[in-house]
Image (cartoon, rainbow, N blue to C red; front, side, top):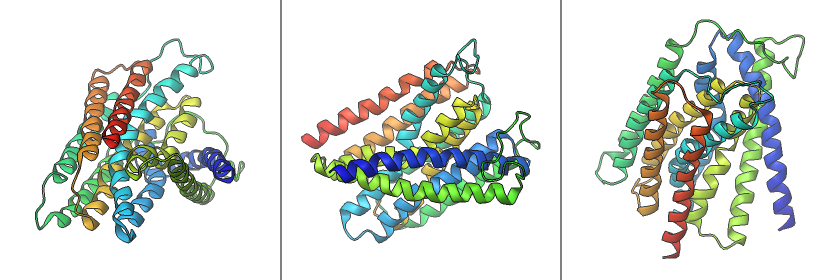
Amino acid sequence: MLPTLFLFFFSAIAIYLACEFFVNGIEWCGRHLKLGATAVGTVLAAFGTALPESAVTLTAVAFGSTPELREIGVGAAMGGPLVLATLAYAIVGLALWRNRIRLQRNDHLVVVDHRRLSQDQLAFLAIFAFKVALGLVAFAIKPWLGVLFLAAYAAYVWREIRTADTAPEEEALEALKFRPHNATLGWAAFQALAALTVIAIASHTFVGQLEAIGGALGLSPHLVALLLSPVATELPEIMNALIWVRQGKERLALANISGAMMIQATIPSALGIFFTPWRFDGPLLAAGLITALAIILLWNLFRRGLVDGRALVPVALLYGAFAAYLTIAIRL
């Protein structure tokens, strides 16, 4: 058990440190590609950090040798959006509150494109509702509908790039860590890819140790798949958000979460629909309903224009409610 705990904490630290290099490199990539903060967060950063969990889902649903392994893949496809819509947003709000003095903020307002974020919540909700609805029915051509989710993500990326700012943010960037005095696009991309490799390896290790700890504590595979594993696989996005908020760049942090949610609503879902029956039981349906409720609450907040960061924190209670429901349901 001691080696497991050591690897658990070591991999978590490795993820955080690698994320420091990743966000630094990806910001410089966005600067060279003349993308604004929103597009950098929703497309570049989100796609990069979503690759590890998408690989976990693909491995589980396509190559899983047992129903339990495929269940982990489907659980990740449903649990990932739940974690992002609840814990990730709450952590951003909490981090803003904790860093308000250092950032010299006289208020708790979130500096972000509220209109764009509210639109993202609606787009995600529409796709997610269709995804949950497919889990309630069975018909012959269902596997082919996975293509629609891939097309939806392609359309989302096209919209983000097309409507992105034509110039990078005016705020100064930290020097590129790999090459402080020569931050070319090549070096920035190399740093981001190198950090992403470390994130992928450390995330895989972290998930493995979390599953081992769950087994040692006697937790059921369903509990690990829906409750614990998604927290582990979404750790890079959460780490990115903490780093960017600490730098006063909550626009990037929230854009990264929003973009990661769109990926989680489409690519892992497509993989699950391609390779599994994609039928939901009670816990999966509950995860879907609570995620939808969280999105509706977030949309209602962002559509008003001004959002107090502290208002994001209570969204985490929905994740707590799901954890309580899942624990009771499994015991019954």
